[in-house]
Length: 265
Ligand SMILES: Nc1ncnc2c1ncn2[C@@H]1O[C@H](COP(=O)(O)OP(=O)(O)OP(=O)(O)O)[C@@H](O)[C@H]1O
Image (cartoon, protein in one colour):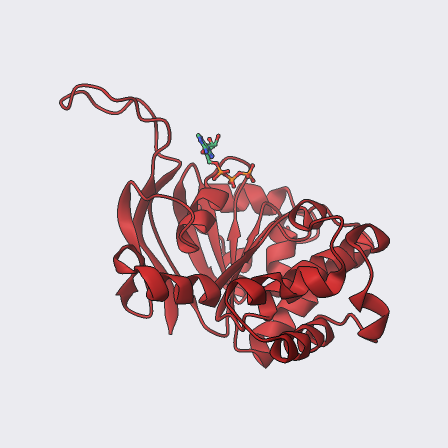
């Protein structure tokens, strides 16, 4: 069971030009191969503009590919239509950097979390059970204390947990988390990251954690993929990538992360 980017290319803003003229822009994603298995956390690390979000959008089917393909359990995403596409969208969920932005301020937590279920058609009792179960899974307990709150009555960490619960109600197989803790107070980051790690185990979830911060990646990831200017320049087990970085860019990232940089001691 895996979600795979195969030689994915994303090129923005290609002008309609004569066919023999070369495109003028460098691809945002430039031939990326990346696999996320169920039950593992893969961190995609790179500086701003390296193409991480573009690749993430490809993996959830929100971005048109210029080249390559996304394959979920051996099926090419581009071939999916109708109910199959709908099922894929349920199986692969995405959460974003700013939990406040992705939540509707007027809705109560119970409605925010149930929203995806309503779209995918579920009766009221199922919805209620799933919402409670999801809130428990993300540690928002006792559940009754949270059901009727609105996003502005929650802390940043709690809002991100609500957003994660909104994905979990759909019982996804993969979660693409785009900078899920970078807007959060440092004191609550570890809690949200640990939650993602737990979900990997308890729900056999495949997690792609996108971050510009190597320390965040090391905290939770089984594997790390390092992205620079649209390419994956290095990937491997987290411990290996940080202990013996092969690429100069990974070395630079390590050097910029004093808590991990062994050469600095
Ligand atoms: N919709 C778009 N139209 C045109 N260019 C885009 C679009 N989205 C991203 N880009 C460009 O593609 C490149 C990669 O952007 P992307 O957001 O994927 O990188 P990133 O690593 O996620 O960066 P950040 O962490 O800042 O979001 C950047 O040069 C960006 O300006």
